[in-house]
Image 1 (tube, one colour):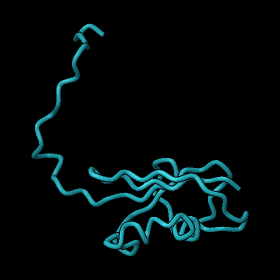
Image 2 (image 1 turned 45 degrees about the vertical axis):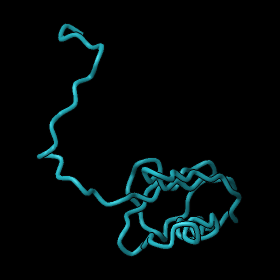
Image 3 (image 1 turned 60 degrees about the vertical axis):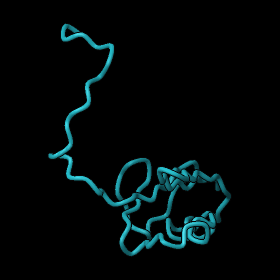
Image 4 (image 1 turned 90 degrees about the vertical axis):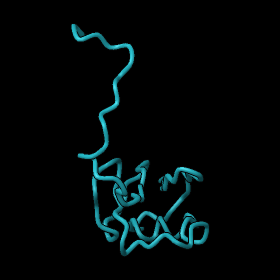
Length: 93
């Protein structure tokens, strides 16, 4: 089956498509992608993973066409970051 694995870092976004056996888990898809070798500092014990934006466990089997995502930790408290204005929207919209 075809899945993709994404790990988005500011300097080096990685998004790979690959074939995995039908009985693969999220962990096996990540390992097969080669991302762990390309990013030696990536620790799956500390990182959350998901499928299409929903947190999941490493033992879950992805479906054909799924995007497996590896999330980076939040480094800034969202409450302390000023809100960005969305340009082009009127208050009447």
